[in-house]
Length: 509
Image (cartoon, rainbow, N blue to C red; front, top):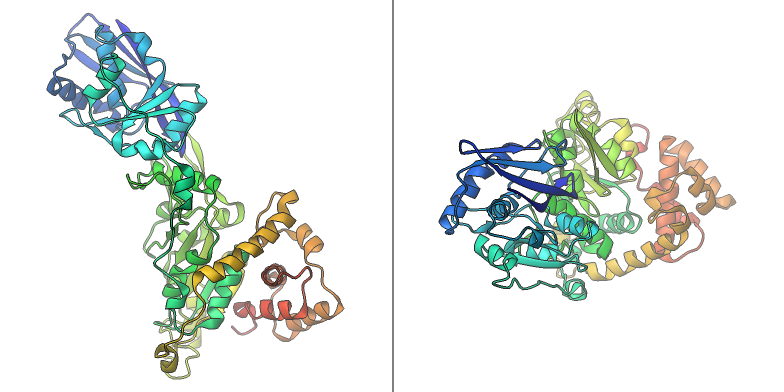
């Protein structure tokens, strides 16, 4: 007898419908799974057999063939356990086949029949909605995440018998709903606040400018000057995620199983800080079946690379595509997947190998060739994509011991939100949302300078030895500073501040 159960799988971060077809035929008892099953899928037969037996159901003593259609796409994960078990019971006549056409079933089975969480529940719920199904049945731990998709019925279950009883009409699985407004209205206060940092007011200002224009930033300073502490507090001044951003970010975290069971959505901007020993696949994404990397997990948030020159050069070079395009494409022989990766890059480095070049107190022991070799580990094309260069000096004792602190993050965030709103209104016709995304045609339209501004920029380029690549960066930064001030045009003082954020472009640096 033949039965068919609707399930789903992930392709990157996107869910798609999979038909689990179960056929029982005469012959010696066997269990074959076809349709390009990966290792965990092939092992499902042993989990399903034990779960059915331990829940009091019979396992057919016939030749069992399970087909996962479409058969030309590789299937991964243990989420097919539940639909296989239900399909076996339907093929034996225990469940009516017509009961299985309304719901997408997914879940991993323990040997005692309990349902274990799966990855990608949000994307699978969206796939069920797009397929026109009534709802989705899945493990309890994934319920809140899937319930974000409110157009379908999300019915979480704790164990296999609950699913069987519901499909047989003998019991009920309550529909789970979430209040999206409550999720976004609840207090999202961050434990990290910029007023925790003593001193470094010029660096805090640079962080505000970077946040307002979504600019990439690099901090240069000696060990212990607070670079990491400052970077960790950057998300606290970024605008809150809107629903579409939260949904896209949650789909990425769901695909790698990093959404907490008690959370329906990722509502706080991500902050990712990979160690410098990370591989290029770990940073950009990859594997036999490509998975999102750190650049995608930082989507709509911050990617912090501490000790930037310590990263392998080939690892840093793969950053160029996501920084430019806001997405990364991972190609394999049988598939090519694209993951979103629009993030703010914040990097930190010492000025030299010992860390004390230019320090007024501690002597630098590095030779000029050592300093040059250390800094050359960061390629020019990568530096081209970093807008702000900020020097972070060592904090003086009188600043550490002071009782006063700077502005709290919530006040700075309001200014950032206002600046972002001005940019969104101005750049909406071009499909952009921040000054960092502007191209040359937008600079000509939105970054016009008066005579004094052009003279100042020309003088700075000549006297400070600024490179040609600094020109567009200075205009973008000046536009953001003007937006923070609410000014319609770029003034001389906006340009002056922007020029100060290009220290690594100066001759001899």
